[in-house]
Length: 184
Image 1: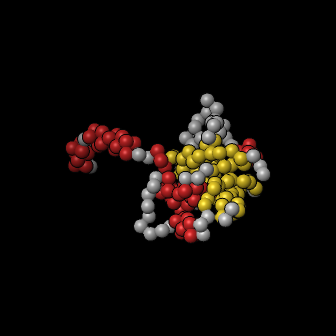
Image 2: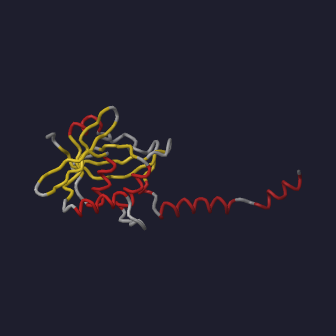
Image 3: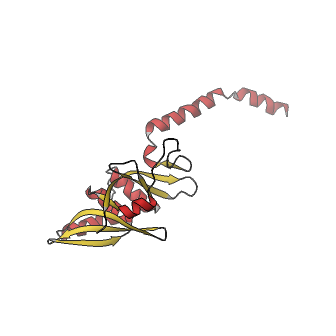
């Protein structure tokens, strides 16, 4: 079995170039990151799980969790085990009747289940070595050039942006523009 490195979900980002979603995993004991592109719906469901937001009706991941429970199985952890041809491969590791089962899964699906069950996420050291990113002190942050963090958009940022817009509107002199229209 390959050496595994525990990671946490650092953030979910939105690319400003194409609106794709990127999950940023951060190594627990180091400043090393792994970026995995995932689908929009998987990202939305993952965001909901991380923020403990319940859907009105069960989502696919809730159904999967119900099936695991009904089988008296538990999810031990999830893994990102390989990177081949720019595609990440994952596993959901289940314990069932004293047996350990490795279920092949997309990393986005595995992370969605991990977030719902609060179980560890691991990345193989081989994947982390080949695709991990260690930011340098002088470097621009991972996503500053082309994406924003979904979780960075909080109310204080919104009110700050609105106050800048309100200041701009207050500086407009609408009376001057009416005078110009009258002259034309």
